Length: 235
Image 1: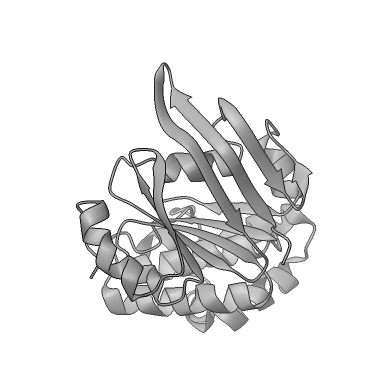
Image 2 (image 1 turned 90 degrees about the horizontal axis):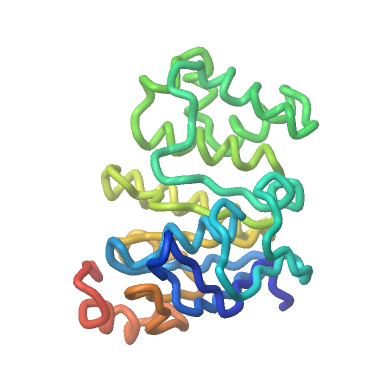
């Protein structure tokens, strides 16, 4: 399986403070990779480097076999990379339909975008005229995912999908993420709480103080090690 996204020896810093110390990650088509770790470990910075939002001070970013180190976020997005940031990523003062309408810049027709969104997330069809900011947290996250899917991504980057949501809602969202991956999309998910994502992950990496301390299959061995790797929750 050829990788769609690779981070090779990536280091990154804010001012003179290095926060990533040689991160290596690989995500293949149809694969869900969970990037776990405590607050401040560098997980979001890793996603920002992958999306071109924050520069790598050294190392390489490879997308679809091409070295794209230093490429602008817009160019990476055109190449098929989509980042859904922490905090939903929707326009709260616009309706659900207008949030989707804004994605027509991708070249897809409004009808096609709505069909994709409403087929995958039927509740959004019922809320089409509702202001996005009045949706539940889970529904807002569904809308953010629907907007991302409108770009027809090859690589999907998700940051703390579970933030502030009830476990049952999170489980349903991750079921959708698994289905998205099954269509061939490479998915890199940042999560602080391992249990939220390990059920669907094909591979997991634990980032502690900017270094990958453990990675491999999300089996019981990794789950058991989590509490000793960082002061988070394996359950």
